[in-house]
Image 1 (spheres, rainbow, N blue to C red):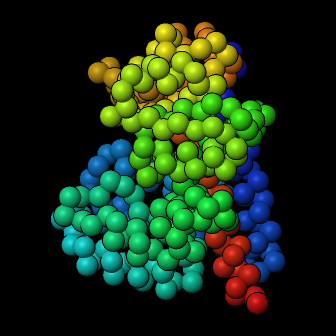
Image 2 (tube, rainbow, N blue to C red):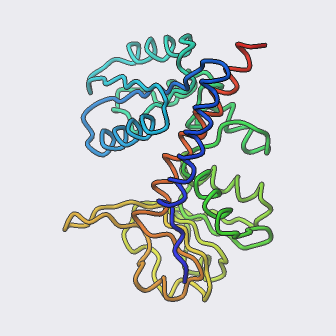
Amino acid sequence: MQLLDGRTLSKKIETQVAQDVKKLKETCGCTPGLAVVLVGQDQASAAYVNMKKKACDRVGFYSITHDMPENISQEAIERTIISMNENDSIDGILIQLPLPSQIDTTKLLELVAPEKDVDGFHPYNVGRLVTNLDGFVPCTPLGVMELLKEYDIDVKGKNCVVIGASNIVGKPMASLLLNADATVEICHIFTDDLKRHTLNADVILVGVGVINLITEDMVKDDVVIIDIGVSRTKEGKLVGDVDFENVSKKSSYITPSPGGVGPMTIAMLLQNTLKAAKINAQKKNS
């Protein structure tokens, strides 16, 4: 069994991004800019945004957080997004999810300019992903693909089971695997007999937030396990969706949780923002 170490790889990617930022500043005087919209007092969201801010600082990005109250109106957030779309110093816009119930999340995601959609949630970028065209890809599934690549895990022709069908992780994860010529199954809350699907899987990718959903009896020998889930136990410990202690004994590769996919998500956000900045710089200089 070998651990898929997202922490080490994310540091490697950060180093490369920082070098590219330095070159960008030297060649065109451009500094990549990321704007984040944070609504409400959700502690997990606030902590995650703070981690993103620190990562931006480490690589030399300009970053700003629009911290908004829980009871903010739809129109107020829309005005902020429009102003960020028009601001040339902002290359990437990120709306931290989830949003309060009074907010139309879909409308806001569609309002972000596709060329600044570094989270890859705009329908334009979703369409380009599904049709295997270049665009911005959601950071978590993109981070998973980078992790597989780093450890020379080729999914071509492999049976890959994606558990979870969210727009943020499950669906784009399946699309990326399909684009890499894998055979893909998507399982979700209404899937009957999950074990029947996982037992035949060469690669299992799970991100639903259910502690110990995947157990030793559900996987075959030498399976590759990508645990995207994050939950907190009663004791306050962060864990994934996989019974790591027992499933790891049968795995060829497995991500720890935390320390696997999580750090890669932020690394890919940096990479996407840098990509947006380079495109923006080319437009300015053309």
